[in-house]
Structures are given as structure tokens and as C-alpha cells.
Length: 177
Image (cartoon, rainbow, N blue to C red; front, side, top):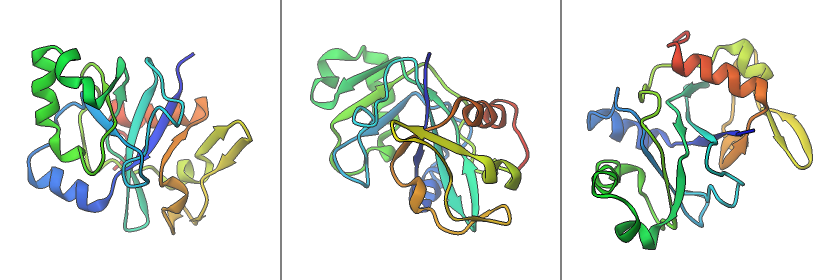
């Protein structure tokens, strides 16, 4: 059964994407690397078939920005020889996501449109749950339906099936904003 993960995008990146006209475009690629600023999806356990939900924290609210279903993960040094020409063009299109040391590229069919205004409702924020080998944990630093700190989202984290389903509903059905 596929898993679902979140990855935190910075507000600077989101502003750049908004300014550059990426709103409404469907995600087709994501990039991973060895550093905290661009974490490794492979190290987090991401595989083909899994879903990635980029998120942003802005003014104590969590925004779910889109979704990419991973078709494959390609080592960055092999991208030129492995990707078909049309996927290589997409790689160039998504250049703003490629910050720092890139070691892997996640490629998928067009995912949910990139939107910057889909806010995770406070009640969902309070029950948003992640899972790992150590067990399940709620999102930390949530108070009165607001996210006070984003530190517990920094990285790539696997969602429980229920939480993934609720984020998917928001992304696919233009949930509350």
C-alpha cells in the first residue's frame, strides 16, 4: 500500500513560485538532497506509488500546496541520460524547486494543481498524525487550531492513512481556504 508524506517548503520559495506564475500548474517533479534545506526522499523511505504533499506554514496556518504521486526516483547525476526529452523539459520548468545540493529527482504524472491558499482547517491541524517505526505522533506546537512553530514539519514525514486521506480531500476538492 502506498504511503503519503509531507515536505515543508519555505515561505521564500512559495513567494518565488507565486511571483513566477506557478500557481495552478500541476507538480510533475520534486528534488531531494543530503541537507536539511533539501532533504532526501529516499532516506525518508519514499518509493514509487507514494504521494508527496508539499506544505507551507504562513501566519500560524498550515497550507497544503499540492500533491505529486511518485512514478520513479532518479539519481540526479543520471537525469540527462534516463529521462525522456519531455520529462527533461519539465525538470527545467521546475528549476526553482532545485535549491542546494540535489541528489535525487522524483518524477510523476501531473499531480494536483499548485495552490497557495488552501489552509488546513484548525480541527484537522489538531488531529494531523504522522507515523514512523517508533509509532504515531500528532503534529507538535498546535494551539487553538493554529500552528505556533513549524519545526515538527521540517523534513519529510509519513502521514497516517487517515491524515493522508484528509489532506488529499483538501487538495483534490479545493477544501476550505
